[in-house]
Length: 293
Length: 271
Image: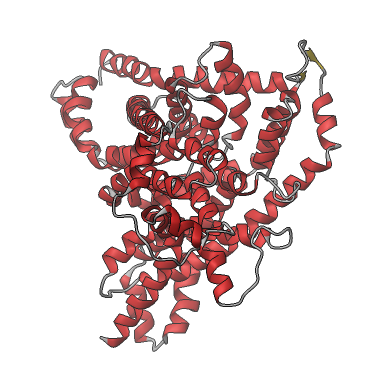
């Protein structure tokens, strides 16, 4: 094609990308610079002057037991919740992967938790779990079960159950989409070979869907590591610091204790921990794009 | 046929379990204050819907303004996100802008935790005296959601047959004409997916809202959570407020369920 045409396309490319470039400059490059700068600064709200401390905040951070505890809690929480959600989500997707009366309505209702903000869900949890007026404690009492939901020993289990109620809809939906993409011929071939239902599931469906399940697991766990809203509203990280996610640690360090330098360094450490996953996600997305076309 | 009803029953039980929080909130919002304080299983319903009236302003809470803020912030975020992502995606996919790097950057940003940006955003917007204005949350939410939007849009543009655009170019149509007359109309489903996901996620934002607003621009998520701490005993009113808060995204996303499913399952990470 002619050079004027190519020039026109290049100019158009720049013009079309301008809003994005402006946002990237203002809300990515500038803030990342500010974040790194803050992490290298002694920046405490109650003190008027700020000054550079080099890597002082990072050195201070690795000596904070609460930071390590929050990392440990976050990863255990994310791992347990994600594993259970992926298994349950896939099992429910298998249940829905057939024709049955009322499927459309029930499928829509299954997706409702996705549409509810985690923070609003947390408020609802506080409501149904309240020991005086909540239906759950009331119900447990009625059937004679004593389970102190917010007790130090039970709080982890309680939070995991709540996470499952909130996010299984997501793993369910992705698993269901993956099942829909299965080729009908594969099942037909298995039927001709005389495979029973269990064999089809274990030897046909699961092996074929293993990459899809792996990516659902990865997406969900990366999301889970960022948990903030629901745990913050339900427990505030307590009792003590037993349920403090990294997100809550960073938030509290900055906005409750006023140490912006320390909080910024913790945020950078968190990003560095997640960074090795980035190439994997990028590769996965490219596979998806090329595989489908 | 009996077996099939067994599936219906099993699915219904699970749906019920997942909806217990929402059903609990609806149940409480419809009961009288007296019944609520006498225990969870006292059946006495409030025929005047007073909790809903209270939540919407009759009892002097700021909830109605939180609701208005959420509508402004979410609608603004949808518009700004589309304005940024749609042209940029076309530029990246069809005009080769930025090579593969901008898409890779978008993917890398998808898994960068929002908490990373909280402190810099707070510093930035404080410096420009923008804290507690809806525009701040529109900017922050658009930044967080635009990566997902770019992924959905570039997927949708990739799926469009290139031949139509080539034919238009051969006929002498400029990039602008092609974009307006061909690409934009064909991109309806992608647009719907971006709109519904962005609306949902910006409505759900709590982290940025709690840091970047104090009272004037507070959305329902922060408002409802504060409600619990400040009016802890007015459970009926809180329930009504929460039920109203989940309604707009619920209605929108249910109406656009097809696009929600498509958007979420196109391999993109949830915010």
